[in-house]
Length: 287
Ligand code: C2E
Ligand code: MG
Ligand code: MG
Ligand code: MG
Image (cartoon, rainbow, N blue to C red; front, top):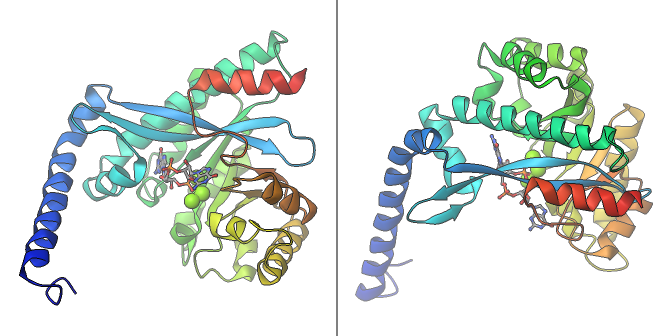
């Protein structure tokens, strides 16, 4: 395509590709140091109960404050961390920070600052899933922080669990038995057989943002509506709660609530932000 556009364009396209490759390479090289230097930080995005509008917790989303490039989103560096194996220590760091944060929220809660209970959701990469220390690390982190397993939800993408054999599911099953919630993230983007859900130790479906987009207008796209209603009724019949991502408008929130979704997350409520913002949002709620 670039070639057909003429010599000039071709060079530009090439230069851009080079620049991207160089950036990818330099980011990959800088990753291990970044962890040691404390350049990562976590933003929290509230999870809101659609029935009563209360804040129930938040999803932890990692960012990298790069000394030259500024704040980088996870899509820029998580794939690199997965390729190099750094995702294991980075993921453990995110888990530890997030669980400590949950503990802090809960302390305020007990002090009567607001109604709880606030929980924390943490994303897990496929490499973490197959890491032999996942269960023990998680148990240690919860114990050290004095947080009960029920305050933690681990998010695993649908694609990571497609075709997962029992060996891969075993650690998740153990965590689920301990009381940790497991959520199937980005649900609806993979090819998983719905009947397959029964086999997975999950208690929450996170409906992908692409479905929420279909609810942008009122009335909603009728096909999207039928699909969402079908998923919600199937999920509920299997005792799974449904969380929707990417809610940007009140219309979407209202339609998804009517369709039976349980919890929502999106810019309509709040963008990801610093942990103290969650206190404020939960406080407003409690009053
Ligand atoms: P995800 O787990 O599906 O997280 C939701 C993403 O949607 C986040 O992007 C969030 O900022 C964005 N989002 C939330 N509400 C809205 C909305 O209303 N509209 C739109 N357009 N977007 C919204 P973010 O923070 O860039 O994270 C991207 C992905 O990176 C996450 O997708 C997750 O898969 C991955 N990720 C983030 N933190 C971690 C981590 O600590 N470990 C691992 N393994 N993956 C992570
Ligand atoms: Mg997630
Ligand atoms: Mg998601
Ligand atoms: Mg997503």
